[in-house]
Amino acid sequence: MFSFFLAALFVSAQAHSAHFKLADKFIGSDFFSGFDWKTFDDPTHGRVNYVDQQTALATNLSYAHNTKFFMRADAHTVVSDDARGRDSVRIESFSAYDQSVFILDVEHMPAGCATWPAFWSLSQSSPWPQGGEIDIIEGVNLNTNNLVSLHTIANCTMPEERKQSGQTQSTNCDTNFNFNQGCGTSLTQSNSYGSPFNSNGGGWYAMRRTQDTGIQVWFWPRNSWRVPLQVRYPYIFEHIGFGTDNWGEPDASFPVKQCDYSTHFDSHKIVFDLTFCGDWAGNVFASAGCGTSTCVDFVDNNPDKFKEAYWEINSLYVFKRV
Ligand SMILES: *[C@@H]1O[C@H](CO)[C@@H](O)[C@H](O)[C@H]1NC(C)=O
Ligand SMILES: *[C@@H]1O[C@H](CO)[C@@H](O)[C@H](O)[C@H]1NC(C)=O
Image (cartoon, rainbow, N blue to C red):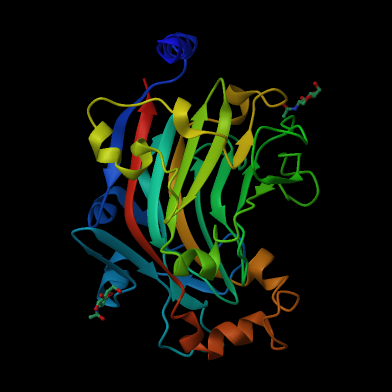
């Protein structure tokens, strides 16, 4: 009886929190119709040659069957000096989303020396970073702990102490501050990125963005017993929608206290990419324990070192705030 009353109180106290309904889902070949294969030069100066969808299909760098979607780097070819870089894939959703929840079920992510994969979202406003950038999964080389970060225009900072399990790395989201470091939180779970993530069967990442809570990211490893139902079985909620009140403390949280939501964030497209070397992975290649050659030589001459450089996605659901 007593606990019944507590539950009733709890429900009414939460009555005003956000509710989300299905906007889009991507499983298997849905990615081929819902995403655009981008072929421009990597803006982060990576040793990469992003190929179009037709080429990616022909070379099996992108592949789907009923329940899986793969995106990978070429792991067969020695790259010639005058090439743009190693063949790889960068895809961007056709649709853009504002207040929403993304739920990504991922089995395997690109890992290894020289790699720099990311799952993120980006405003279509210009110039960058007008409208903001949200990096949900990102890291380089042999990293094992995921870094979540935001990149924005001026006047967006984060308190050092927040309700998050992760560790604050930097608090100013303004890209003009500290060479565009952004405001970042690194996750404490050492299977949240790279090969430990993969050997554990990956897991689930969820990102929520609302004007009242700001931006939150959660990670649950494959073997976690705490995965919320809405995350493990999003298809159950396709028609009825859900709230996120039972998801527990986020692993990374970016509240709106010192960062006005609507002037810093608008609708974002979703991006998956996989580059090599460049502004981040390249600059820390040696200190990451990746050897004494240059990062670019490593990428060009060691195709077999890129066998683990692939995304294997089970599903991506987008629920929109209603
Ligand atoms: C293409 O990639 C998929 C996924 O890794 C694999 O199962 C399949 O055998 C590959 N096909 C070819 C022709 O290599
Ligand atoms: C940031 O805040 C300062 C001080 O209020 C203001 O002068 C400036 O225009 C703001 N910049 C942006 C990009 O909003």
